[in-house]
Length: 210
Ligand code: SAH
Image 1 (cartoon, helix red, strand yellow):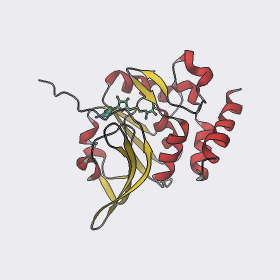
Image 2: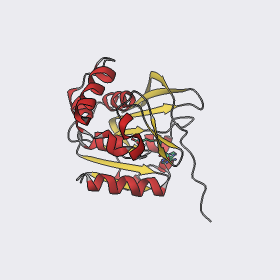
Image 3: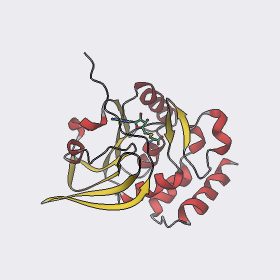
Image 4: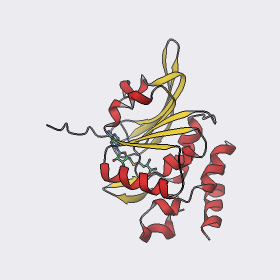
């Protein structure tokens, strides 16, 4: 039953809107989205919308996950940083496509539950950390791609600096209304391209601990 719903989701919401990267479509057909939402929402896990995952956070609309993943132009050998682990769904989609996924979540409770979920599902190439995404993950940098699933007001410079030359960052930028942007690191600096208007939860600054 869920397999048919997933196939329909990919056909009607994702392929129909123009996503065509076969690696992305395969991953979206494979990852069991209903296992990433609260049990009372499983029946609508494949609907064309974001859903609440607790702690005031949401799992993004399937199309947006697919679109951002395609925009990152991933290759099988890539090492990718995600900021905003949430349920772990986007991380699972990435993990089916690339070699290693590093994912940062500011909420420790969400990070721990996503880590358990992906470990129960058998993922071995996703690495979790609960910290402030604005600092990136310097020990594991540089990355071939970065996907940010919460919205900063501006390009987070420290994170951009952790991209390889040729590396891509997909990030929603702005406060209330946001623009999904593709930032590419070139030899000479960063190139910025606007992709589409979006709405994400804000990327927050974690209060420092004293
Ligand atoms: N990618 C997720 C959805 C993310 S929702 C999924 O597939 O389910 C956005 C997430 O970003 C929230 O869980 C929120 O806690 C987290 N977040 C917000 N600000 C952050 C920051 N500064 N660093 C890391 N994570 C952050």
